[in-house]
Image 1 (cartoon, rainbow, N blue to C red):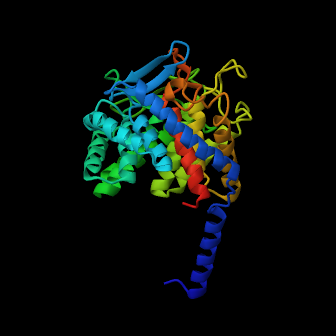
Image 2: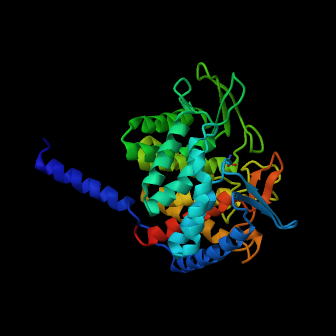
Image 3: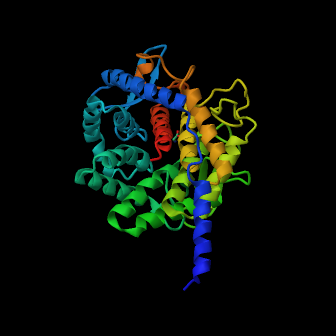
Length: 401
Ligand code: GLY
């Protein structure tokens, strides 16, 4: 047993540490007003989007020049973002029409709980059913989430120590940095069922990814090709970035967000250190513009004329706000201020769409897959999702939630 004075000293130290970490941040009342206006505008925009959407389809993007509204089926990796965005807006505005639309589209999405051909089940099912269950828990949602986690876990191979991202040739086992975003679903399932195998898979995946996906400067490769028999790394390359050795902006954002969630769920300091290092890479990079919305790739050859990626900026803002709650005072202020700048930038031109335009999407100017010339400088459903999430997080910090 500890001696009383040692105990008192330890308690004091702990509470001092906690004080220096807990919310030393000063949210800006002006920005909160803008955010409230944004939520009200977003509600109107998503009602415009609803009119474009065929009943069994999900929004993908909108091409302003041709007025083409592109949609997908429920099996596309982005299908969860539409219901997720509706729910975040509904939470702030209490607009019942958005909740009714969410319930409708969740019915179209629910069959994906059994989809074992994709690693994207976290994006698809947790951003949607996860938020729905958080706001109004239902047994039906719980069952769907557990089945989704089982489908995701079926893609884990202990020989590699990762969940397989993309099905490929027999002698390849491909894992992308984006996959870090699917782990939160596994943590939820572990907590909901008491089955620690979900937790162990998430931790093993994150540890393997930490070992193989990161360069010494804490930027990440996009794709690691593992030997499926031995787990040895066969190749490190890109798919959506400028080059194999470049830092694709959204990939860096996925890593930042993913390791922040890992720390929230495990409280293991190595994951906090990893998230801090990734944040350092992003925020200290000479090619990060002053307004903090990154170019689509930190090494794009045509910087400063390269395209920006609003989606990467939105993911980074949301992740940095969460990370600002876990770290020491200096980093906390740096992350919070950077996230504020990102949100402020996205709230204005050229990013925020004028009411009634942009196919109902909130944001313009994201980059999906530039090497394939697909979804280049367009609105994207995940840019909207992480933007509204970042704004909610900002408000929650202001409200001390
Ligand atoms: N592969 C998901 C993304 O485009 O970020």
